[in-house]
Image (tube, rainbow over all chains, first blue to last red; front, top):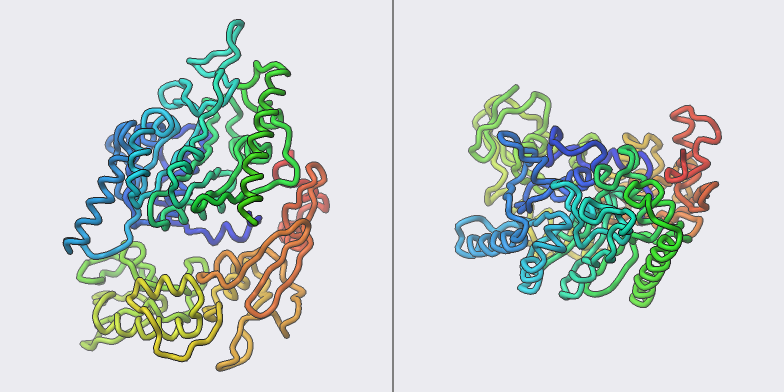
Length: 310
Length: 239
């Protein structure tokens, strides 16, 4: 990944398609991710947005943050709505009702709307091969309803429905590997991104929107409210998630893996966990268990990336 | 504020803005390669041609340089404009037949092949990198050298530049990806179409990762008047 300092950020467009003044919490990584994604997508786009934090905070009647065409959908049918929009556009252009042009169709949803409730619609849309981009903003629980666990919640995290206590160590299942599920549909483009690496995110969203056929980008969004961390640490925690190997940044283009950032040495997972209240209760052997799994998963992805490079 | 018509649509615009800026604000698409909102327009690629009617006659102007005026009538799409854009595209395609970005734009403008003799360049001399280097970074490490058919993008005398800080802005902003850079281990390589340079990267004192070119950090440190040890740690290890 390219390391840019202070000059390149001045060259990113100043036009905000996701307007400020929305109701996101202080330090919200997801609002930042949406803002960056909207910059990368430009104006020629139609967004289908599932219920979730971003829909709640950005569309308080009578206000809206969206300066692009935007449809609010239910949790379960974001991908279905996006595929409908895409098919309709295709037919309108074929019949000559609107001019032939490149309009990106983008579905946005949280981790609950993607890996739990909306999974079958997403799977169907990817299988049918619609030309659309699906962005999953993963903050690892149902944050807008009060931090209930989802299948994207990591092992050991304490949430209101997987509380840590005498009888429980928090979430007892491992995080669902959504990018791998998307990649298993043999779609042309799958990527993971994080707003702590803004240029990488901009490039991946742009690439996904330009890809003919379905594209899936999984974006880790730090949630200070739900992760019980300081609000000024969201960028740092995002970077630590990548540098510890918990959330590796990679792309899968036509089945070929490519690591976007491969740090020479991974940091220990405790660097990432000690900053968050949701992992505070974890004992040392549980952390060792997490470390073991994280290292193994990272090694697996790295192995694939090295094999595909050759 | 002035009022003008673009493609029959009445739009309000601030005085002193160019047609391209106003069109972009109002979501009217005009193709262009060499325009960037951060730097002064240069009118190099000529793809943003539009037809304006003023003083009773219609003429072709470059919209990134033409300022808006009250009562101006602008057409962004007509047969005449399309024919002119296609000719420009054919010339660009003849210069850079293997460039993906140019191939893509040519396809969008309906140009499939060029009738001119093929060259093999990646750079189309729009000088966007030169302007960014000068106006945004403030170092002027690269420029367009020579004249006519020999015109090329390079550092002075094709030798490694003293002032280049290796920030990579030129590579980022290039509309046709003719400039590349990569970080391998402790070195950053920047490849311009005609020469290349190497930069040593700074190692973080705490984590040991290489995180930015030493020259760039030194330049920023001097500009911002920071103490000598300001960049010893990378942003992740900084307290």
